[in-house]
Length: 73
Image (cartoon, rainbow, N blue to C red):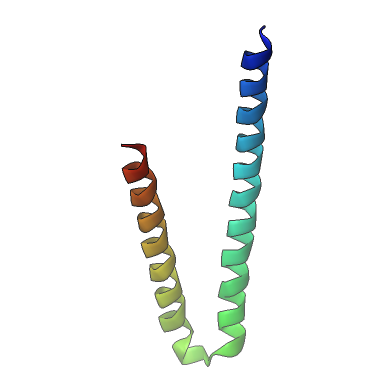
């Protein structure tokens, strides 16, 4: 293996590990916010705020995916 190829594989491996850790942290954050919504808001309003938060997460994900796809062109 050449030095450049080995370095590229190392960087790719580090990127995959970082993305996995980010996924775990994002899921933990999402579930923590869901718990906080249950704590901060009255029972009858919880589902409304959970839906709003989930919708905001979906919009942000769509924006980031579109930004990533547009930046690749």
